[in-house]
Image 1 (cartoon, rainbow, N blue to C red):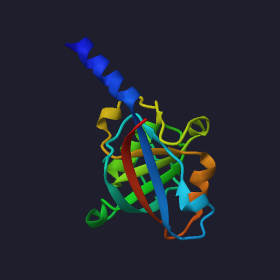
Image 2: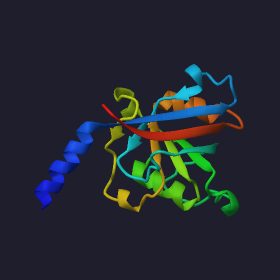
Image 3: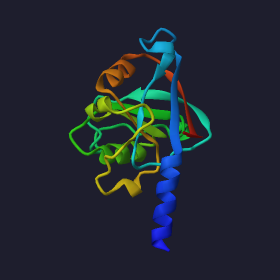
Image 4: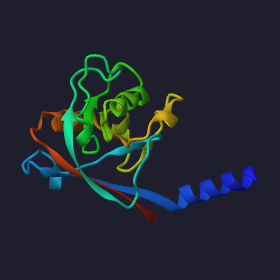
Length: 165
């Protein structure tokens, strides 16, 4: 039974590619070609395939290794924010868990690991606690993360699709 499940998982993995779009809605002049940012997925967190959602970005300058000293997001708006941070001093999984604890609906992490990857690639960065993360965790280049963090009043649309190769 397990062997059959593994074969099926491999078959699905080989037959399907994830296509993703992070579209910057506002501001229009933002330094990205066609207002789009390339990104990969962490190998943990929940992705809402087939849906397009709009979010506000909140850059975080303090390390997301703990919620201590960080303001929780307004509970009435907790499904509207993605936190943005360049790689911190703790694991990517811990950063995502902290963002989740603060009430974020997702996190965008700037990481040099993404520079060598293709758009839509799964980045294997789980520290063993990924099963505790229930928000999308997106990975961009450190340069793109810095640019995103520097934009004021930024709104994005994120869509996740599965397409056959």
